[in-house]
Each structure stands twice: as C-alpha cells, then as structure tokens.
Amino acid sequence: MGSFSIWHWLIVLLIVMLIFGTKKLRNMGADLGGAVRGFKEGMREGGEKSDAPLANKTIEGEVKGKTEQKA
Image (cartoon, rainbow, N blue to C red; front, side, top):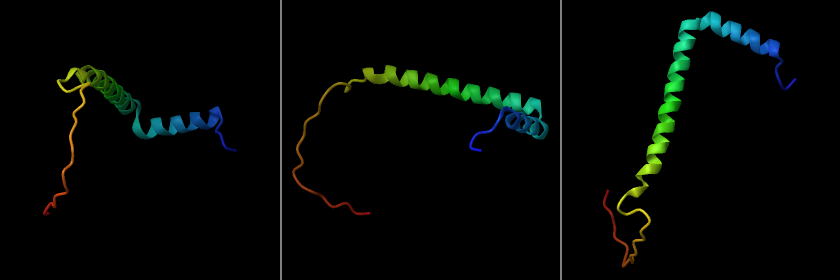
C-alpha cells in the first residue's frame, strides 16, 4: 500500500496534462531546466572566486573587552 503502481502514475499524469495542458507543462519544464543550469553555473563560479586576496590566510586577533550596543 506504500508505493504506487505504474497505472496510478499514468492516471495522475493524464489528469495533470488535462488540467495544465502540454504547452504550459513544456514551458514549466524549460524554466525548471534553466533554473537548474543557472544554479550549476553559479556553483561553479563560486568555486572560482576562492582566489580572493584573503583566501587561505589566517587573521589573528584578541578581544580586549565587551562593548554594549544600543539598539
């Protein structure tokens, strides 16, 4: 009872196609593919930006005291 058979998924697909239409589903698929492609490109660019001036450098410091911040 936990999983659906192929017939259940085909009926769901048929109902979705009747509600939205094939053109709108195709457009949504293209938009989703473009979003995934843009995300992958952004992740690749994020890895290339590790050549920043402070990358791989340690900054040492010491905390002298606590200061109050007014809101």
